[in-house]
Length: 377
Image 1 (cartoon, helix red, strand yellow):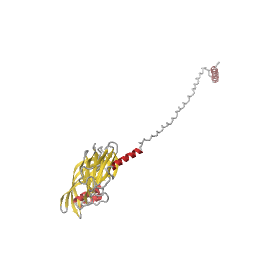
Image 2 (cartoon, rainbow, N blue to C red; image 1 turned 45 degrees about the horizontal axis):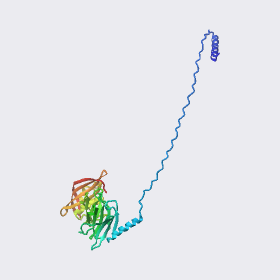
Image 3 (tube, helix red, strand yellow; image 1 turned 120 degrees about the vertical axis):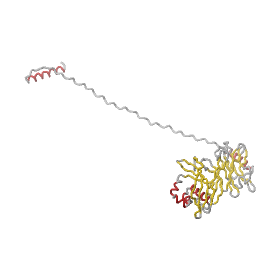
Image 4 (spheres, rainbow, N blue to C red; image 1 turned 180 degrees about the vertical axis):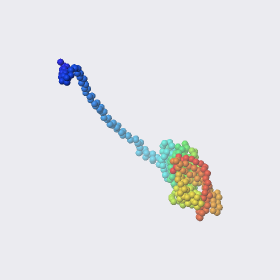
């Protein structure tokens, strides 16, 4: 007999005895036990998957740059070449004041360019170019006016000054009376020709004046009372031409004396003071009536964006005992939103004589031109 059968029989007997004691007729009903639930063991928690560590990449070795090969100079050959060039110069009885080496004819090979003083009474400044094809003289087509100069000056520049793709040779000279000269030569295929020449009794400079990054040639002349008059020459692609004239201080040192002994000098000094950011000095050149109309603070704010001012073509057109009218052309450069904007004005000033000097009272201005300067100093 199985375990389950014996258990059922025993429980049935106990039930009969229980009911008998209670005085009840027993009614036997089979006792059915529910089977015990089947225990399912829990599934084990999954173990985390281990990710193998990523190896740190090893940077490749930095290659060591090879040194740039330098040309090997043959000392003997170089010495022989120098001796030959010196001999060629000496054979012409030339004693150079200054001597430079540069590519004067744009063939990629440097030439010797020199300046010397040819004996005479007075002597004459001369230039030359020596290359492997021969000797080339640099001299003006005429000696009228002293040629390239009569003093032993050493001013020599080899560069493409006007940015036309050709190299210019610039030779500076001087005449009696402190007159400065500048002669420009350029290679013309079979020799060097004179491209342009300039002179001024206060000097000749090359500076960019209009913001196009191409230097203009400026010939300077005495204008009296501490002033200089400057003629500006601009390269147009084929030659230099006069394009603008202006006034400047004779000397660059500061402070400058603002002169008002003449109406035109008062106007010139006014604009030179503005250009030099001497606003109090410029304001003092205004008449009492003009200052009463506009106090200094409000007047000065009007020049808060001014970059530079140039004045030229100053003419006195009318004058009485205590009044005068002066016309001028004014170039003004302003910073407008980060851009340098140039404007040309035709200005007429009314002046009054106050005390010992002329003062600017009121003006009218007509706009002649406007442009954007790519660059301003």
